[in-house]
Image (cartoon, rainbow, N blue to C red; front, side, top):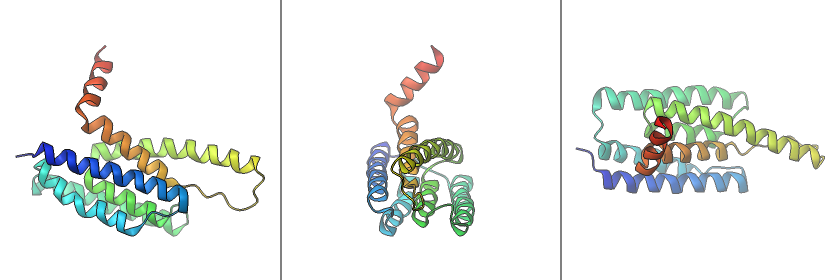
Length: 166
């Protein structure tokens, strides 16, 4: 049986962790391992509070996380993604159903593209010769917060449904 109150406590903690990840990535271009580990380690509590079944629900959660890590590790190997970003996205895959995680990835890609364009223009305007560094953890965190708000908050769900029906 789902424990909705505990779910919201955990989702609140996840939202705070995503904000911390975004701010540290902006400030230091780094997402701390302890933060990614905390996000991943609390996912089983969320599974329990959500009443997920071992099969197939948890198998899907773990499978999507492994696939996410494999793809992102490849991007890390070619220096297209930072290590903290890989771990943050993998940890988020543990929290979200495959369909919701796919939404996160699409939103993340759109936000990351906009962020990259804005930073590229700013970088060029300031005539900075060094390589452009994009704090992609900001896009991951913003997409995560967006998905949490739109998928888990009842008021957000009601407004999305009302907008879609009206």
